[in-house]
Picture 1 (cartoon, rainbow, N blue to C red):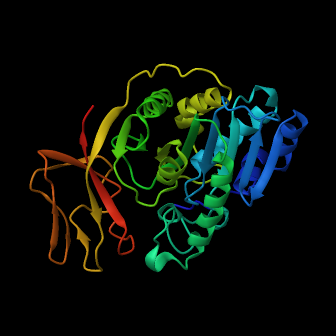
Picture 2 (picture 1 turned 180 degrees about the vertical axis):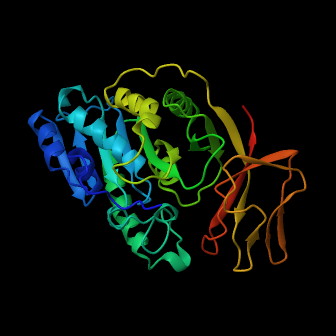
Picture 3 (picture 1 turned 45 degrees about the vertical axis):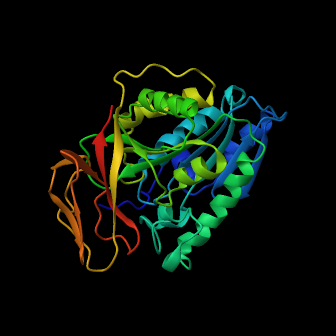
Length: 333
């Protein structure tokens, strides 16, 4: 499926996909906010008078260039918000992660950007995405520096493959209890059906901001990859409403149905080029496997299901050596 930008995009969508913040930035300036453009693809909007009680919220889209649905959703939301700019109740950083990949209609240029938010990059250190990650890290540190304790990062994605839970999220376990409870409540309001608690970094943007900058962070998967300008925005209605309420300082609404919560049972790491997975590329996220089933083989290493039932998420044998080729989860709530 082609994911390159479609011709004749609505202006708000075109502007965000190209990281053209001109009109939105000017509206926020006219409303008295301090607006910054610290790097390509990044807009910051702060209250004129610093306030430690004011939440700081980072919203990122397009970390993978082919995941276009959140770009459309956020484009319309931020455009509307800028037209009633005085209602913005947080300090906001808006990040369009991988502008070059969006422009090319590709997931990445050299390697997965969402594996670059770590100090050790090994063979990936010289990739295009490593340089882009450095830019994002510097700008993100600067945004959260001096912020109060209420810090959020919502990294919005869409999944490559179908899922038994189309709307799901990955939440770092290390987030403090109260902040994590608030985040999970918001995810429920946003229509998230399943939450995976992640005990360790895989180099993702959201884990970086949780671990190093004290943010209540989540990678949020909102349905499937689609073509820019042709996404079914009705599937994002709950997430859009919840995000709009968060940015306007309105309280979280109870979820229609609380998300199911899963723990990470094991990470499947590709150790060598001999790696092969027993689950096919067509396997849906959250497909169950039974105790003793072989998940993957990598030379002398065999990954098998250890619990009575584990569900496979993000199976991808095509990742580079040293990266995570999938995770196995078990339900805990």
